[in-house]
Image (cartoon, rainbow, N blue to C red):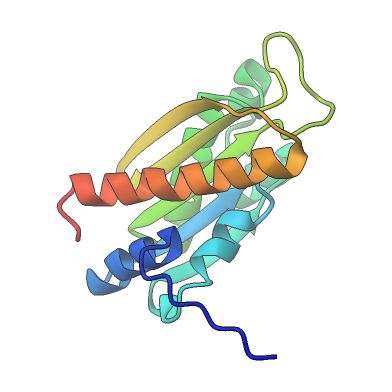
Length: 168
């Protein structure tokens, strides 16, 4: 069976075009999305000129060792926090020497949530040319739905940031 798609307006194609056309590089640091952001990025044909690497840093130890997240940050704010997402995005950008990065950290469920940090809470950070923005998101759904919603949100957040910085 031969199946082909021609969806030039998919988020993978939009971000891939912007990154490649502007000679920008990108890397990812993921926790709750487990590599889905990287997988979506690399589905764009030609992304190898822009995508440098993706790290799935699920444990706190991996966040510290691989991304340089401060132990104090994790102890004070937790793995699921604005501060940790920011350090993840900045850490992978620094380690890979990329212009841009995306980081995700959250609680996809079904367990692990608390009143203060419920299932569906995800912090998404985008880093571009030395500046980092973090969004706090609350997604509804099962584990896979939350992971997919977070992935799409993260890529759309980066597309917006790229466009806001006059990358087309």
